[in-house]
Length: 156
Figure 1 (cartoon, one colour):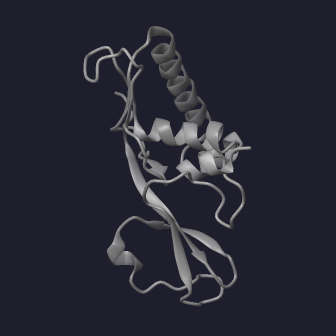
Figure 2: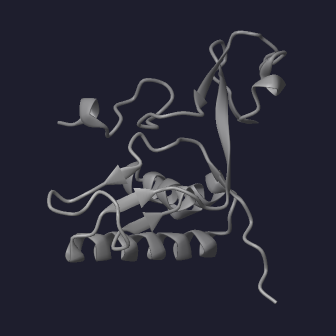
C-alpha cells in the first residue's frame, strides 16, 4: 500500500500559471504540468538560492523528499524546453501559509492562511500589535527586510 503524500507548505502563488513557446498550442495534451509544491521547491532552491536544508524546512518535508521534488521538476522543465511543450502550474498536495513579521523587533513567524485566525495577533516575541504579513499571494518572495531580490527590479 502506497503512503499518502504529506501536504507541502507553500508561501507564494505563481504570478503566471501558464507558459508557452511562441508556436505551441495554448491548450493540449502535449503540455507539462508543474504542481504548486514543485513550483515552490524550484522558487526556494533555484530562484532564491536557499540551501536544501532551509528549503525542506520551509516546505515541511524531509531533505530527501525535497531532492526528489527538485529532480522531478527539473526533468519536467528540461522536457518542456527541449520538446517545445507548454508549461502549466496547478494542483498538487499543499497548504498555503504566510509569514507574520514584527515591525518593532523584526521577529518573523509562520501563520496559516485562514484570515479569521489573524484578527487578534500580537508578536510572539515582544507582544506588540504592530505586525505585517508576507506571502499568501503573488510576488517575488524576496527577503523581508528590503534586501535586493532577484526579480526584475533586483537585476543588475
